[in-house]
Length: 101
Image (cartoon, rainbow, N blue to C red):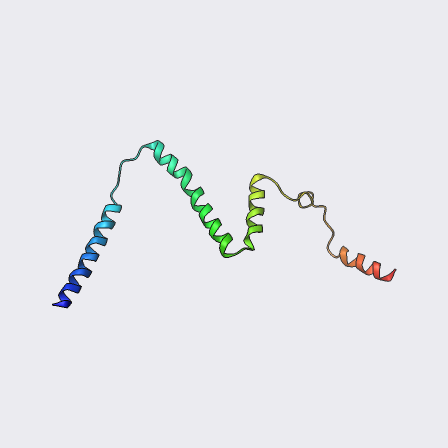
């Protein structure tokens, strides 16, 4: 008798899950304004949630996220923008010159 009760409970849970999925997949009426509002807000909230989760899991990504935000806002390092940086190997030459003097 206990086996039948267990099977009935499992069957009931499966039936409830199927009815719940059927209810969720039903189309519903939505206005154009409401659709556009949801479409505009959803990606921002989702990406913000993932960014927050990423900051918690890997603290080193804070700097990378800040750099990406700076690039999106149009700010960047002035030296990188001009291309005025040390030439490759010039640091070694200065070190060698400093040792010889």
